[in-house]
Length: 148
Image: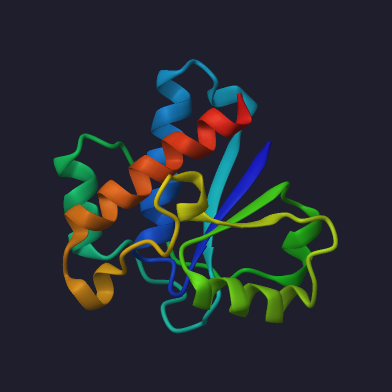
């Protein structure tokens, strides 16, 4: 299954989700069953690396990651992926604008894979990368459980 995690700039939440999910499936012995990636709905951070505080939180939590540059999602990605997991309601609206529609029901909200729902805390504004990590890790576990 091909999954793309989506946020506004692709430097904080979506790359965190990408690497947390990759770690979960690897630990479960299922890495070969999934392709996880991430992208932005905006062009603001294209080419930039993972934001340093997000990197530090991944390191603090023991989540392996690779160097990467922010990329923007493209309309053509709709046919290349099975699932798009957005971090918040704004990302959902922006992704619908890019895709035009979601005929196959491929777009889901990250926190819908938790009992809480809502939006993933945005550390760009809160500065609380630990809270964002907790939201994303809980949701990634719920996502993985839903795909077993």
